[in-house]
Length: 198
Image (tube, rainbow, N blue to C red; front, top):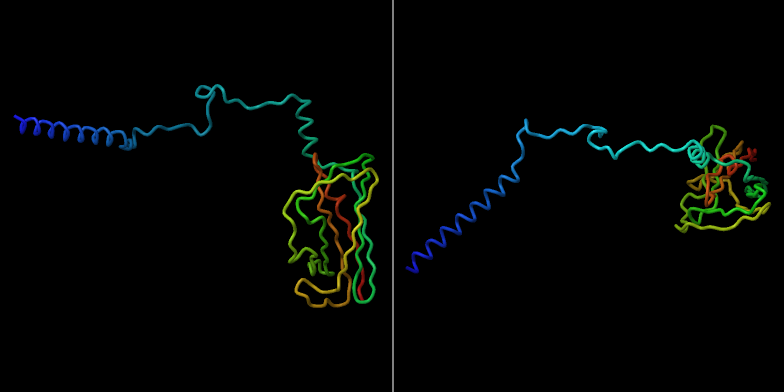
């Protein structure tokens, strides 16, 4: 009697396992090619009535366009170069011309860069080459008419440390400055001058 119950129980368990495996196989069987559901590339209004193109009122569209456009008349970058004792002294500044105090930012510890090109417009020197800068957003207030002054020297060597031949060189200074709100016209952050070295 007990043997019969054990056999019945075993048969029941085997059937249960096979039925579960069968259901699992059916659920995971991929559909035949003719049964594959095809969805349209673009959701149609009938399928997704809640998806509609967002339209802005004209006055808001104007504000968005203004925010995307670079602002002008905020800054002036000045540059002065003096050659003496086999090197160039590069003095440059950024002046707030906006008529109001501005919150400016630097994307890192690098506040500017200097690039020098020969008369074939080839870059021979980049000030930031092989320098490390703090990777942090740095903010400060630049008051109305306030000027940030900087000075660097170029010892007339290229990026490899070799002396460059005498000739005409263009020095380009670019200020690495942003605004907390808005985009600055890049022209206002760049100054350049050409000098003949001896």
